Image 1 (spheres, one colour):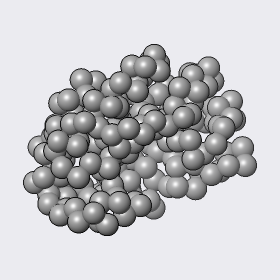
Image 2: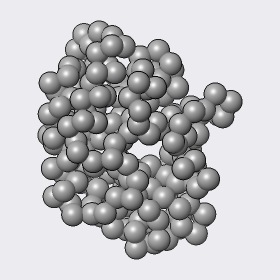
Image 3: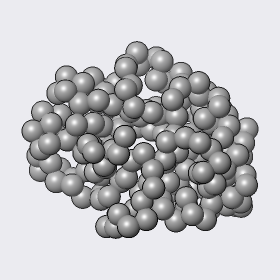
Image 4: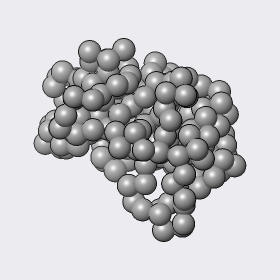
Length: 188
């Protein structure tokens, strides 16, 4: 098991040496979101994490409302990662949550069959090692993760009882160098 954090531009500048000194060994860095969004700190975060001795993966926050948009998001994500020219030792994860209510406000049906197919299409289209990120409830109620045959990054704060997956996001308040981060356990 390894400890790690996930970050985006929303975390501001990260002191990667402090992250390493706190015992963290990996980072999952947001590369992109939607069909056109680019995390402005992606390349800097991956390079900083590598310089401090951490291994890295990436994630794409999905705003897609259908299979076609999921395909377009995968193509965009791949272009962003390739354009940054960074090495990723861990998978790219497709984040299928609706934390900001975007999907709900646009009448997204939250149909498990369609959501699973969106994940499948994203994975097949990106052409990189790819897994799925979602909360435990989404993995139980909306995404047939077992049929996808990929790495699963499960967000379930506070309890490890029902964890099944490649990685577990166990908190959103790990304190490192005076800043708060999401923290994860990598089981692989």
